Length: 208
Image 1: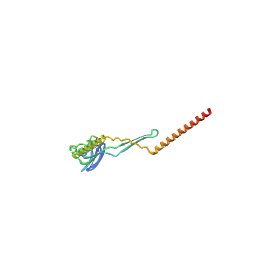
Image 2: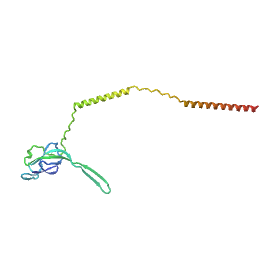
Image 3: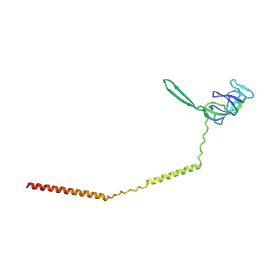
Image 4: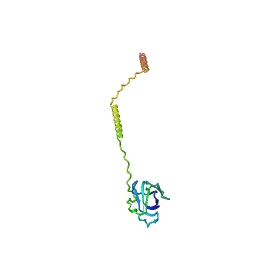
């Protein structure tokens, strides 16, 4: 037994238990939806609709909201323009599993109709529950950090020791050098004074 249904502007041939990708439906994961646009149904008898089969329906369960494969659209203008444009697109799809094919009385089943659109409610996210152990661990870590900061402050507040300047002793070699320089200066002064005296005595003799 199979049926041909229409949804999202496309036609699908389905049997019970088939998993089909259809255009995005406004339904949540795990919800049961019903396709009412049935073009043909084949069971005990084959019935072709004009355009739809009255009372026929296909029920399916929503497995997931997915996206299709990426399609790349590349446009290039030739000759004098040299312009290029690349766009990517992924179509929004809904994955459904066919659970039941109804030949008659589908309009009185009371199941929500499958409507295309993006008005579905996303699945709720599971919130993390904070346990008492986690709270204790956090408090212990915070107390450790406070102790560390106090220790650092104590170290910074401690007075710094003043270093006394070191007195460097002059070496004997430097003293010997200075004494030798002083002796040479004294000898040079004595020689200049002796020269002056000799010149003055010579001048006095000439005058006589």
